[in-house]
Length: 126
Image (tube, rainbow, N blue to C red; front, side, top):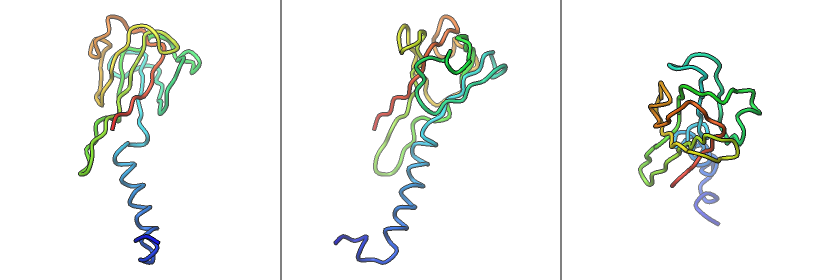
């Protein structure tokens, strides 16, 4: 028997609080939006999970702007990072770029020399 079973209703409330904190902490499990053109214009692709080949999502390999909607989120007891890593080639190969929570208006904002992105994945640190 633990504290949750001793206090009626506490387990349910704690579970609700935990899910609220988790959503606040991690966002909606992380989201990145890729745009075909600069300044968030043109076709877009919203991702909440890794994508080994952007071409399979009918998105061109040219990505000129990115919005990362999840990133570092502090909570009183711990800290975590959720970053995205964009790769120039499919299958997480080639030059790679770390994308933090931020709006990138142009591919040079994330340090790339061209607008080619072939794959992208989430990296979580805690």
